[in-house]
Amino acid sequence: MLRTEYLPEKSWGALMTEEHMPVVVTITKVIDETPTIKTFVFDELFNIRPGQFCMVWIPGVDEIPMAFSAANAITVMKVGDATAALFTLKEGDKIGIRGPFGNGFFPTGKVLAVGGGIGVTPLFTLAAGGEVDTFILGARTAEELVFADELANVTDLKIATDDGTRGHHGFVTGILDQLDATEYDTICVCGPEMMMKGVLDRLAAKGIEARGQFSLHRYMKCGVGVCGSCCIDHEGLRVCRDGPVFTGDIIKDSEFAHHHRGPSGRKE
Amino acid sequence: MIKLQTPTERIGGVSLNNHMLLAAGVLGTTAASLSRMLRLGAGGVVTKSIGPEPKDGHHGPSLIPVAGGILNAMGLPNPSQEFTEEIAPLLAAKEPVVVSIFGGTPAEFAKVAEWFPNAPAFELNLSCPHAEGYGAAIGANPRVVRECTEAIKAFGKPVWVKLTPNVADIGVIGRAAEEGGADAIVAINTVKAMRISTGMRRPVLRNKFGGLSGTAVFPIAVRAVYDLYEACTIPIIGCGGISTADNVLEMMMAGAAAVEIGSAVYDNINVFSDIAEDLYAADGIPAGEIVGCAHD
Ligand SMILES: Cc1cc2nc3c(=O)[nH]c(=O)nc-3n(C[C@H](O)[C@H](O)[C@H](O)COP(=O)(O)OP(=O)(O)OC[C@H]3O[C@@H](n4cnc5c(N)ncnc54)[C@H](O)[C@@H]3O)c2cc1C
Ligand SMILES: Cc1cc2nc3c(=O)[nH]c(=O)nc-3n(C[C@H](O)[C@H](O)[C@H](O)COP(=O)(O)O)c2cc1C
Ligand code: FES
Image 1 (cartoon, rainbow over the protein chains, first blue to last red):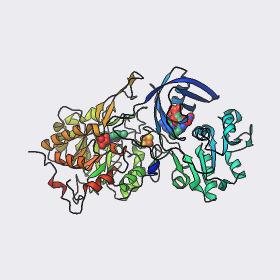
Image 2 (image 1 turned 60 degrees about the vertical axis):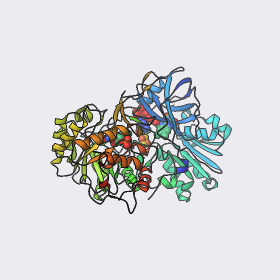
Image 3 (image 1 turned 180 degrees about the vertical axis):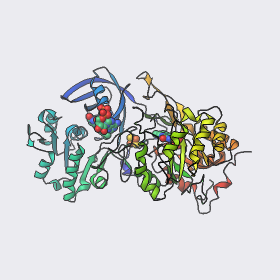
Image 4 (image 1 turned 30 degrees about the vertical axis):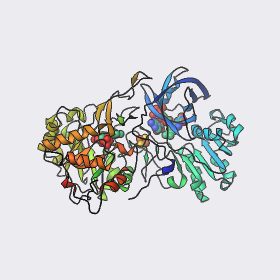
């Protein structure tokens, strides 16, 4: 019978015999990265692959998916209720962490990373581990750039801002157009979907979309591949478990950059 | 081990590719994920339960894997009427899709059923333990179960009624469904349960309590199916904690004509094809030879 497990060798193991209650951690440090982004460091190290994520439990509020920005940290942009509640937490407060979940990046050879906005978080762990050669970092404006100084130390960093306040005036794809993407064996990408689409289109034009590894963002409730809220058309792959990182050839003909679903499952 | 033939007859009025359906609410919100499970070997699929209004479901945490099972309080998130567009291609292709529906009254059930004129069958969710005013809240009352069943039976399609184990006598509820004209009974939905995070000193689910599924509830499900087989004459679809071919056989011996599998996809997305490999053989026996054989 047909078996189509996506990248089975990369899937993390989970057995029903194991307990996966949230690990309660204490926040040891809150770092203001930008006016809308904070890093929360906690007192527990998780064994992660760059690109893996966790479900963050903010007691009494909600549980939301977050990439690890370090083995003991998450970096969060304030966008709504749950992230606003997280922003009120201080040193000594407790949150719950389930994870690490999903398949992270799996780069080989020479690596280019392209990160936009808060999408830089999963790529930051990749770069911090010395796995990125060239890094294209984008943000709306200079003030919103995250991890720029740290990335400059470990990669050949190129910066783009929409308003031109730092680096290239325009989008990250503008810098990509000045490079020869075919020189890279793996192109790891995370950011707003339209930005990722811009990168995918450029890779596809050169016939190298399979070298692209894109970290997708979908509404998630369980994080472990059971509830179905994060499934993408048209193959029904689970972003939480079969992803969140997918190669460009897998998502090229999917719902990627077309539509997504909200908490009720309705298309948005 | 006993080997079976794949079913040739309809079960509960539905033609299935094998005896195992994907259970409601597990990877069942999109046509794409339901198709994927059919491709991966499910003999049929039950959709996420669809209700009269769109629901976002409970805030998180809403699903936690615990030792031996899964604790969830999803809160019946569903796209409501928009699901008709979602599922249209699968229904048009005549795939073995059972549409699960819920409501707070027989009239609400009927309102939802009306949206799916070409569904091969309906499964009535009278058993979800964690949605106020729905599911088990009304499914513990035999009169309401009979009335809801009658209301949907009026659409002239097979009606499966899914029961909660959280009642004193499941046989009474099964008989009410049978009296209402049900074509099959599905048992069980999740078992009411709770865990507390000791680190946080509070219930881990945002909804405080939820329903337990997976391996841990298998003995409870076997007992429920056994009781229903004694109490009723219509086919029973066994559900709850099934993850191996031997579990399927055991459910059949308790009285199940077919089974549904949900939580086992957590360990193994290929659970349907893996079980089928163990369960079926060209020279296998018809399942009818073992269904209910554990009864005196
Ligand atoms: C794999 C993955 C990794 C992520 N990593 C990060 C990260 O490192 N840093 C960061 O700041 N954000 C990250 N996000 C996004 C983050 O999960 C959302 O911003 C957060 O859930 C918003 O919650 P809210 O209640 O504050 O906002 P809401 O008001 O609920 O919504 C604001 C936006 O966030 C999205 N969203 C809300 N809830 C969820 C959910 N449960 N799952 C997915 N999306 C949701 C909605 O589509 C909406 O567009 C990640 C998301 C995923 C799927
Ligand atoms: C995440 C999740 C969502 C569920 N949603 C529904 C639902 O919408 N309707 C329903 O009738 N049962 C629902 N159930 C119950 C299952 O269909 C099934 O009855 C139960 O999980 C026991 O079977 P299992 O142990 O094989 O999972 C859900 C179960 C889980 C784990
Ligand atoms: S979030 Fe539940 S399947 Fe992905």
